[in-house]
Image (tube, rainbow, N blue to C red; front, side, top):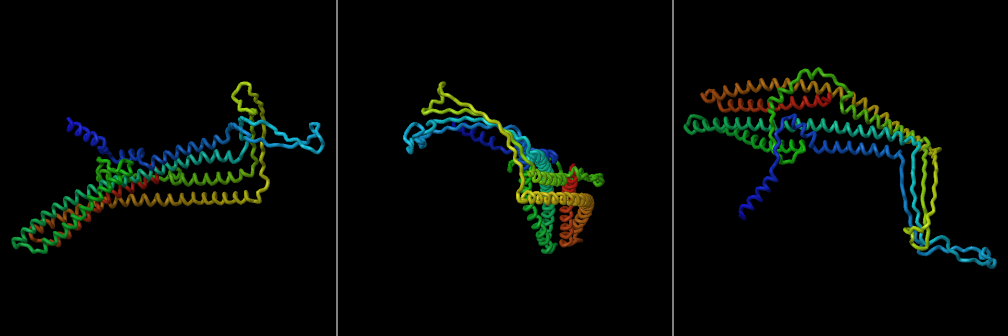
Amino acid sequence: MKKLLVSFFLLSIAISHAQEKLTLSLDEAIDYALENNRNVINAERDIEAAEKKKWETTASGLPQVSATVDYQNFLKQQVSLIPASAFGGPEGEFEEVTFGTTHNVTATATLNQLIFDGSYLVGLQSAKVYLQISKNSKEKTDLEIKNQVINAYGNVLLSEENIEILKSNQEVLKKNLYETQQLFDNGLAEEEEAEQLKITLSDIEISLKNSMRLKDLAYKMLNITLGAPLETELELTDELKSLSENNIDLQLYDSELVLENNIDYKIAENNEKSQELLLKLEKSKALPTLNAFINGGYQGYGNEFDFFKKEQPWFGSSIFGVSLNVPIFSSLARSARTQQAKIEFEKAKTQLTETEQQLWYQFETAKSEYIFAIEQFKTAEKNLELAERIENKNQIKYTEGVATSFELRQAQTQLYTAQQNYLQSMLTIITKKATLETILNY
């Protein structure tokens, strides 16, 4: 019974610590990351904070109510001297008297209301811009995470494909080396031929070990990008070749750039608006401000602490007032701050123009690189077919004793290079299309 309980306990722990398994296509991986990536989550929190900041700014111009309660206990009351003649006493002498009571309580409630303040009006506009900046930041983060997922997902597929190819090459080389070793042992081949194959096999085995390590790192990077626990088991349903073929869209080359849709342009526009509002804020500081208030309160006095008794007398008071503050002369300090804000506003307008020019350049560059990636893919595919045929012919020639091991190794090296170029060209199509779509805000 005891062993059964221990086994059940260990099983429960194993189940509770079992790794989550995610089965994801590329689109599903992007959706998952847009919900769980930590940068995305923080960007959403920034929007929530901006909404609270907007209300904080709005509330500062709404009625403000405060209340105070003051209690004073004169441990030793102050003594005042008054002429004794005031009480019929002799001239030139003074009487010692104390004024007030030992215990005093004052309770006051005050209502303040802003009537006019130019900086408050500018602050309301700034709060809206600040909220929009946070939303644009979230959009920028989403696009960056999407690109990161595409790259990370593609790198995992690339590492998987690369490992399969290296394993296949390894098997072919082992077969070649075995056959050559047999021929050498029987005096039908030179030792150099076996050594050439050993060199090639050694290179492949090192590459395979490195690729296995890179695969583990690629999976971890994908988990980080997704926002999943680092050791989460992933099963990717898309294949590199099908993804690359699906990402070939020649019509995308004819797309037009709409600057107003690009997130970098939106950010630059918001920067210009925020600097314009800062200029307005400095100008508004030259305007008068008008505030009104009303308060009311009660005061209680006594030589004993009897304030909670019904018979305690309370004396009420109330006051209403208006405060007008008119800036007159600041020794040109306000003017200097206004000029500084104007300079920053002009800089923001220049930056917006620069962003516009850069985006046009980036758009044309992204289109060119995307088309080039498609052309590279098609060329790499043809080169791989040629390299496979050349290597196959050399295999046959080598088996028949027509080709040397050096010629076979040269053909194999050419094949391995073509394989790597082909794999990389497939990933490049996917990433270059993602770059172009990011600029177009697709």
